[in-house]
Length: 247
Image (tube, rainbow, N blue to C red; front, side, top):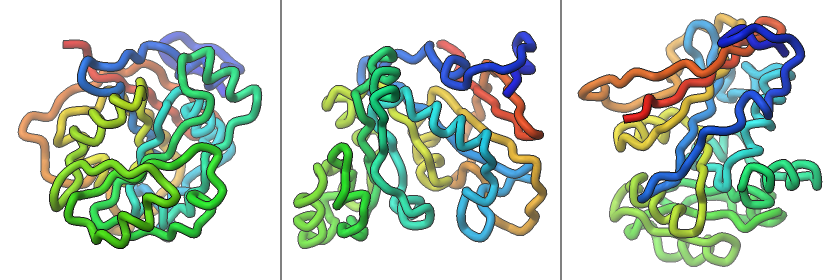
């Protein structure tokens, strides 16, 4: 993997390229988004992002999971991608400790209905107890079922309030949250004005079709700019790191 910007260099370490510069806010953790897209903007092939990912993207995906205390993901993405529990080797845990992260990240699933497969490996074979972020009006029997295998946080009445959800994660001690999608959850985070960083892989594929973009939802009233931190390249894939400019 090589760095094209800001200063060209060959054989760079992705963990080092993505390290640093993340401090929690007073009222919430730092929020990163990580997404992959084709050159023409598709976020999946046959319903899964894995069709866009090569070896280098998987390397960056693993590197980005070095930094967060919590991996935030929508329930639709959990189902589509077959999420399992996050893993951390002793070397990974040491690296995470060096970046002030918890020894193993916790998965937090955002779901308004609390309708998930609670017998899946994500819940039955956890390396860290998952978190379920749901609503007060989710069916009581589902919340009770979830509470047997996960810690449940209520953030909103009929729909999940992502600002309240992030505040709750901050109260647990989370300093950095990595959101892995999908596009609907990304849109909610943007609408709430809580996104600090975007890590975007551009895969050298043309997909066509009418699939979703990396963010869906209402247009922002005022689009905001991003600062380009770096551009990495490997086998035609580009890895872009953007940050929200400091106020």
